Length: 202
Image 1 (tube, rainbow, N blue to C red):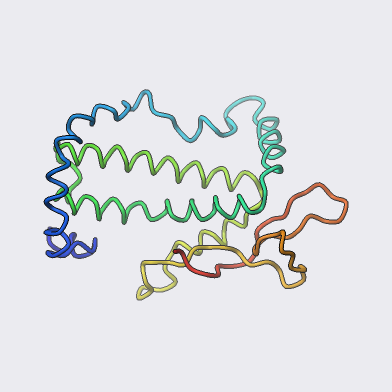
Image 2: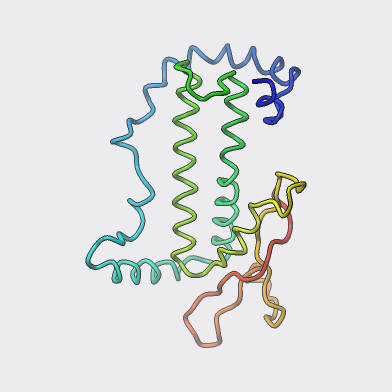
């Protein structure tokens, strides 16, 4: 158990500093844990995406992409950052479980129940963002995916956020964020993210 807490960055001092707060809040958590929606009532990522099992799935995807063309490049960069943040969910979950001393993630305690519900919600966020960005066809997902994986066994587990860089042949414009090509003159197609990671997450 101690090695789990150590990997989660929850040493003895950190646990002691936060233990009183966790215990003080637990009665309120117990009173409100029933706010967690049951599985049969929770939203799912597929509720907001084209239904690829439907007979008109091609039309649904076409409509989806047409709508996605109206999304600004700036907003796409924000969504990429959000998705990369969600990819770290296992680390967050392990850290929080260690904080409430539920390293196995199976305790019936109020905090443990709430954390499992929170983890499931955040996981849905990440799944939806990943699928949405992939289906828009406007983001180089391979460049993003490379960002959230260590490049070597000794690499830091804190990876830089992927903001793909623009191609060298693309003129820079203050109105277009780094990592996206501008639409061709007179065309209606928005830019597409290209390149590899740059910068770091804050």
